[in-house]
Amino acid sequence: MVLSTGNNKTRTAVFISGTGSNLKSLVKFSKTKISPISINFIVSNNPKSKGLNYAKKFKIKKKVLNFKNKKLSENKLLSILKKNNIEMICLAGFMKILSKNFIKKFKGKILNIHPSLLPKYKGLNTHQRVLNNKEKYSGCTVHFVNSRLDSGIIILQKKVKISKKDTESSLAKKILVQEHKLYPKAILKVFNL
Ligand code: GRF
Image (cartoon, rainbow, N blue to C red; front, side, top):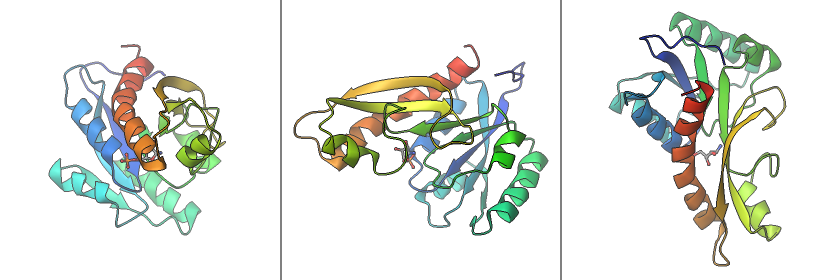
């Protein structure tokens, strides 16, 4: 990805829909010296996202857009992101699918984290499907976003062993711990650091 680092960190927006634990880990990472990004904006489609509390906690601007009219919400969002000089977007549990037009505007600059070893188990209910298929391993993937769901170029993956005792929620928890480490590592990789 060609992004200027220089002395200034790349201004990044994080898009969430829920708890925002990946957002929290990204904010912590962004405050370290080695981080090439700063988190300057939080976007959610869900006004009840717990993760929105991090906006206040870390003094980051936020915007909630309902995406009921996708074109309208995206156009509004594009102009807000432009106004705030946002150069990069990290999707972190964002449950809306961005349009081709939106993705084109941030070509090669949108990353996503998915809780499976892509290309396996794209989409929702990942952990339950993995368990139903009696997989021995699952994991998480950070990838570039293209116009097809969970299908962009893979940046990094982390494998997680599944134990016989694992349930949907224990597996989700185990993988989430790895997600928090993987996303920052993937960002460093994107910047060749
Ligand atoms: C994570 O498992 C992420 O991979 C998936 O949604 C979950 C979001 O968790 N896309 P959080 O909101 O970051 O805690």
